[in-house]
Amino acid sequence: MEHTSSTLAASVRIVDNAEHHRFDLFVGDDLIGILGYRQSGSDASVAFMHTVVTEDFGDRGWAGVLVRGALNTARDRGWSIRPVCTYVQRYLARNPEFLDLVAPD
Image 1 (cartoon, one colour):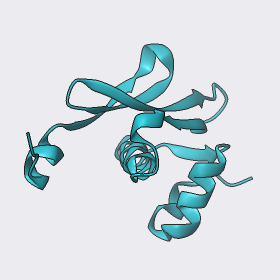
Image 2 (cartoon, helix red, strand yellow):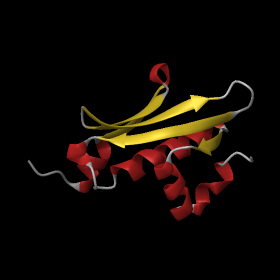
Image 3 (cartoon, one colour):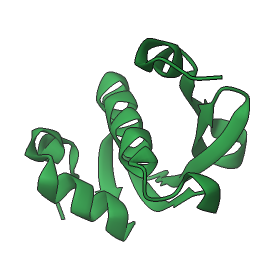
């Protein structure tokens, strides 16, 4: 069965799985990626620790979809972020509209 882009877009979800300290990326019912985070107790910053996409879905841009969704959630929640993950660091370099979210050193 072929998916139209609107059908595919409707089936993509990013969920904050706070119990496991990660954002989960679903395509349909399949969990295909995670972005782990760690909240700091001393300030309002959240470290984005690692981004993983399953091998079957790799090299298709899903990590970028996940990171963008996580950054938009961070903005909505008023979080500042610490990009520990090298993928998140590269994403921020390519998408400067999110640089205002980076916590000062």
